[in-house]
Image (tube, rainbow, N blue to C red; front, side, top):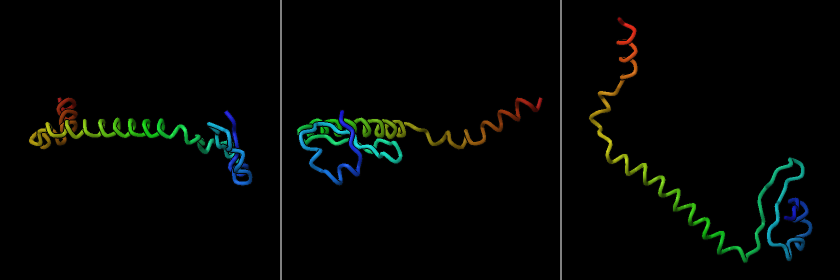
Length: 92
């Protein structure tokens, strides 16, 4: 995989011609800033993005689905339960 710095791309944009994947680096900070992908990979990237979004939505919806089964009447009973447990344990 070819590596190019941000300044190289700014000065010589034609260096991207004919390259499929380029790692964009920040030479001063020695960090990868991102990747350049040729447009022929656009459908693959969109598919991956859609899959990631659906996975994220699934995990968020599972939490919401479990929330509907929560019994709010237990909240008051559980309030300070840990404190009461410690007091009962060490009060003897």
